[in-house]
Length: 150
Image (tube, rainbow, N blue to C red):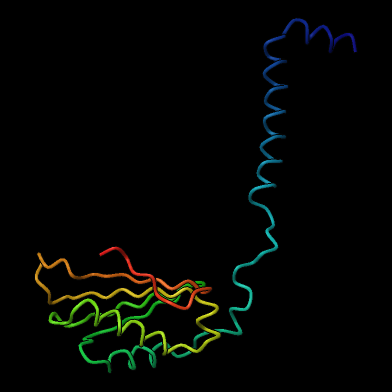
């Protein structure tokens, strides 16, 4: 014991740094556990019950709308992203109406589970035409699409 006390007295700075390092490691472990470890609220609960099995059918039904040239759908976790390429003469309000019709392609349980994002683009529009793209977003707890500010 005397040797330890003698060592501590002779190496005060080193001892202080080691104690501070140990305290820092303990605080880091506590903070990490509080912020990042085990969250019982799994946001993907119920995904298997609400799985969208036939994306191609949805894409084909979207392509049948007037003024729609192409459509793509991407589903990642709880978000459905739909990209719709429209004709260049389609007005923005009409594109928004088409987007609202696209929501009807999903049943109520799908709309209540997934967040849906719809992007209307125009590949054939002039580069200086600022009508497109427009982006609409529907949160799973809302009934309507909220549009970007353009």
